Length: 305
Image (cartoon, rainbow, N blue to C red):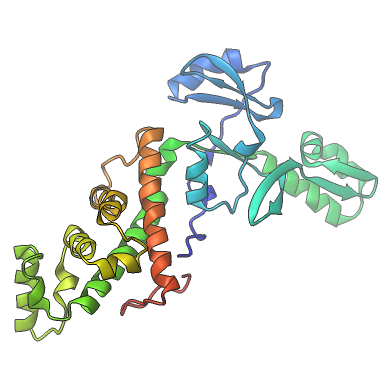
């Protein structure tokens, strides 16, 4: 399942940064804004207001702008926050972005770091007559005003993150309904598993001459129960054990319900994030198993899958 359109940069916030020389004078202001961390990226450190400790920013805390959201959430289980730095360069190794140093630009009189240019833009403009280089200096200066963005646990509750979770769960529900219909083509054979409301909706659809299977009216919890009982359907999703299937995917009902209620907070702490990301990751793996077996739903997929 391709989820690369959901990038971590899309839920990051502009970072309020400080320096090692001035952060002590700014602590009260950070506290007033309910910030937990004072990033000092130019000094390679940050101050943790929750425990009053000065700590180092590790290289792995810097993210490439195209980092998939799920990958960033996995990193947030290791680090208290992550940073985006418009001046930082990255290398690609084994399909992953590895943060390197500050980007350098080759100018007529030498190679200069982006932060060097941003700190002295007028000086650099005066050196060159070529509009190309002047525009480059202008661009670097513009980026410097919003150079850093930050990603924290709180960002997992933003609308775009919920859209990612919903995208996975809705695709999963469609697949479950399709599998159930293929395994049990006679809708009435599922009356013992379906809720009375689902049976009522299906019977009404018959009266309205809509030819649909009862699985389209069943709740996610009911679909999971039907699939969990079937060795054939479970194995198509990569599960030979009913207990493992229930343990891995049973919590999706709770996640779906909370996603559908936007006023409910999804993630309160690192433990919550780990739980939800594990659920979503296992769901993606189950969908990928179906893809590998070329099991396709009757509903068309979106173009980016």
